[in-house]
Image (tube, rainbow, N blue to C red; front, side, top):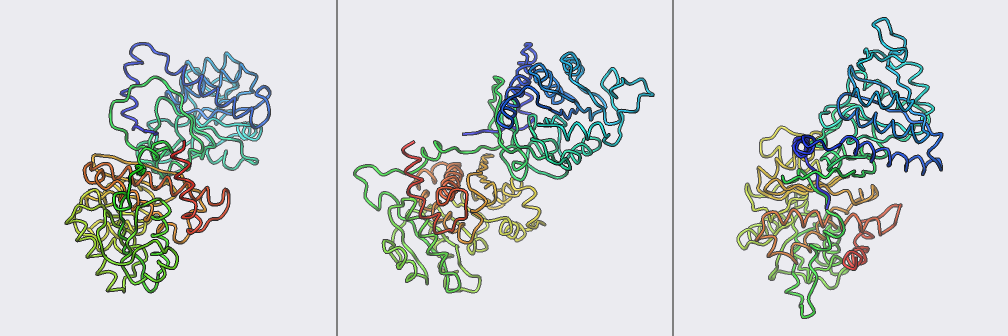
Length: 516
């Protein structure tokens, strides 16, 4: 499992090591330089003779970048550092110059204030000025750009001289590879927001611990591939956000014992579909059946279509261990909405976990326990929050998914699974997951119905744990999102998928997880 911690927690963990004299910057720079060398070797076959441009901001992040640049220069890389800050890390600048790295300021021709011929003053200061021709030429020649503009303290986008540099890199043709130093500059490090100019990276080399922005949307899209350079930090606080990996999902999946029977393995009640959307019922049932639930009971008007697709499904009332309610339930379908209301009432009275999706979200009671899991997309979450007095629209949710999912949890008590490019899951006690397991092709009609069925199967098989541990439903929801995403990859690697093909891929994906 990947865990991420906010900037304050990381700084607190670094403090005792720094006080003891541990060379954290040297370790970070060595790791960064090593990963950049791998990038160069993969891209051009060898390291020597490559060109690297360092975008250098203030503080330790710029210091890491300069020291890594010095190491690269000693490996035969032509290194140019562009100083974007009024003051940069002095020791790092000395190290780069000692390794014969070139240093440019944004205004390389302004030396009237006593600056060096390369545009930088002896103390590393640089005047605010537009990007020069020399800087643009360096970017055009670059094989790789190291983004060391902003570190843990950055938020709200890159501004001032750094923003000019970001624009210059984006405009460079062909665009060089970009390696972010610790985090992509300008993202909201602690909350994953992206509220201004950000230089999207192909690779992020992060130090000591994962940062929330590397896991959470929308900032996570700017990070590219992420690698961690360990610094020996001891982080005892609860993480800000986590990401399940395949082994974690396998450990959570309900696996039948040799003496198992269908009722003991979990029975899932499904109230889904309508005359307008019968396919949603078929797909929710498919997700549950293919994910391995013991039995599905379907309640609703789409029984003939469900049975035609899945003859193992039982139509009608009976005992269940968990529910899926809402997929494809139209707002004008009074009888089916009444069935949803009845199922919710029954589930809450008998402590049965429930997946509340789509048409059932507006029927949710004011307060529910965390084994009720809401599965909205951004528009549905905005509507749920607006109905509870929050002034929020879809764009607001998409800009800050974690904050709005947490607000929905606070207002309802439910576990919240917010669907998206990165699926965010929030539960009680500050628990949060961010799963980025599916391809973009998974944004297809009916995929959410399949996910509801997968999660319902998992809750039916682990219903006792879901009720006993308030935080467990969030882990189960994250596991369902992971398996659903892997099934989309398995259904047609690298190409388009349908919701049906995703459901059909589930048995092989689950078997593969359990074998591994």
